[in-house]
Length: 284
Length: 255
Image 1 (cartoon, rainbow over the protein chains, first blue to last red):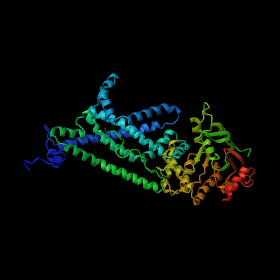
Image 2 (cartoon, rainbow over the protein chains, first blue to last red):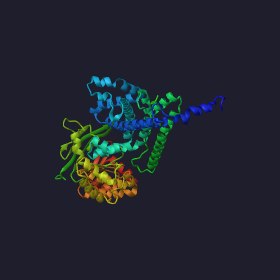
Image 3 (cartoon, helix red, strand yellow):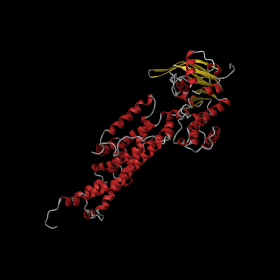
Image 4 (cartoon, each protein chain N blue to C red):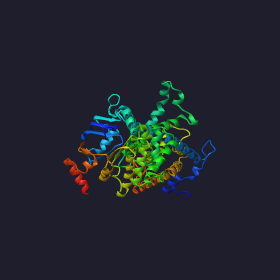
């Protein structure tokens, strides 16, 4: 062993699968890099869940506004479509930088409470909430398009039946159309959620502390000159995303079986939007 | 008939979809309690006529009066105005060719949802009403089934119960047996016969000539967006005067 220079394979394993480095203590703390990166992944999960729930809600609101009927609502629809187009077409990273760079002075100039410009709710720092805002604005737009596909896939007869029973457009949407639409789009929404979860890594750019999992890996790289923290982070992602991807497949298969049976139930073929992995180009 | 109360009156009704001029001036009077069967080749405007009457497709020209009130004017003469729509949908029930049951709701929920959300009935009131209506259409054992577990005939009977739950004054039936397997047609027609016997005002678009002969007070033959011939079934079906009616009946009855 001694003397001979290490082979490429040895360096590869030394760089990516170095358990000695992973279980070293983080300087000036009493936890190991293993625990440090696990903590980072908890931040990733928090961002994903909070951002995911808010995006689901915001996307549905946008989709419903987009379907408001009548000429009087045309400007409202146009603004909504403009918003969706804008946020679907701009990188999340750019949105995040726009928010974190200039939100506090704008909030200040508007005379709003400073708390809105630099929130510290739930013991999370402002960068965390900038991330949530950017994710919600961007993924709300993606998800609005998914919901729209679902709403448009509900047969027209459903709206006619609801209207002929005296329901207003709003009640028909709420009790008849949206419940069916949401069931149709669970698989593509889950796909978007997978993409959203991966995109939380873009908060790297906001210097969030404590950082999410990619940031934590970078801390280890800088300190230990070793990438094992990144590999561990990747494994943590896969532990969550692979079962989700399998769930999506299973849901699609189940719905296809249902519509083959010809039940004519809620199922119908699930609405495909983007391929798994979500909106292309969201991550750099 | 002269003493009969007028339920519905159409005068010069026109309806187009884009360049397609579907209704080209339809006049029709329907008395309270009478059953009108509308027959005619496909594309003749029969379904559009029903959609005009309940303002799912407000006509561009002409007048429709429901119980003496014009429903094609609105406050400022706006066609399809909200106040008209509310007035109409509370009085006119509709049953569709494709049933259009709400697939995410079981039979009884299909019948209760609009009662609660539109008429503001309590859940127990709506449920009682729904149960008695489902019993009336012979489905008291299917109350909790979802539409995809019901046959076409059963689904259509739920749809009839759903419309009746709103206490309509007029019922519109749009080819309600056309999507059914032949052996399921009778159970739906039987329910409709019962309704007719009980005095419901009904406008029925149908291809079932035997049913029209048995049940209708009046048969209306439509072709190319106008009413070509109308009268008692014995005349229109038994002794048609117009060439187009004769040709149509010749084709239909040849089968």
